[in-house]
Structure formats: structure tokens, C-alpha cells
Length: 192
Figure (cartoon, rainbow, N blue to C red):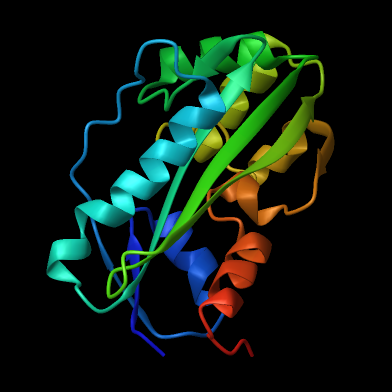
């Protein structure tokens, strides 16, 4: 098996990948993550997932490199990481009583052959009605300012949900393990 590398500095993605009990290293890709003109949210996450994997390929020439990128979409608007309380509060106020789709792009690049697999895994969160006090209490308790959509599904954020729809709950955290296993199996990786 070629060594695995996760092209991400996200501690959430590393924690998820550890579930597969495969040895891996990680590296932070340095790419321009801006959306291109006329690019859909799905096209954006697919492109960025592969670009992240390719960005660290020169330092990892004989590896299987995992790239992932995620956006949250409310209506026609892409919600980025809020970075602060005010933006997080605004995002959660807009999500109150609504549904937010999370699109997670996933790429597996074999840097020895140049072959790659790319996919997008959707997951939808249906939010409860959230009043200002509840939003503030949540944000003060968990401070999810580095998370698209302004919540941590693996933590207290689940209390904000009415329901969810999707085939792989790990995609909500940012690394769809079910689809990743399919890709790794196609590269001959034995799991478990």
C-alpha cells in the first residue's frame, strides 16, 4: 500500500481519518480557495479537493493523497467559516427554521500514477427555530468560528437540528469516510 497523506490542516478531518485505523501523515496545502466566476458550489468543492491533493503531491511523490473541501449552502448563498461571533450569529439566524445543504468535495490522488478520483457528497441539516438567546448560548458554549455553517455537528451543535438527510454523516464534519473507503478500496487498500 502506498503511504496515505491527508491534504488538510483540519483537526476534525484528522480525527475522522483516524477512525479507519490506517497510518497517515498530513500536510497543509497552500491554494487559492476563491470561487471562480460561474462556478457552482459543487464544482467549487470538487475542484478545491483535487487542488489541495495536488498542492502537496510534489513533496509526496509516491503516496495516496486525500483532499477534501466543504461548503454550506443556504438557498443560493454559500456560507463560509464565520471566524467571529457576529458572523456566526448572523449565519445561525438565517438558518433558523431552514435547511442548509453541506457539499463535501473529496479527492484521492495517486501521486505515483497521477490518477485521481473525485466526488461530492451532499448532506442536509434541517434547523430548529432558533431564537437569539439560544443562538448566543450555543456560540458562547462551543465557539464554532472555524466551522462552515457556524456549528459543530460532533458536539453541542446537534441540539440545533430538527433532522438531517444524507448517506454519510461524516461528510457533515468534512471528510466522507464511506465514499473515501470506496476510493481507497479501488486503489487496493485493505480496510479493515
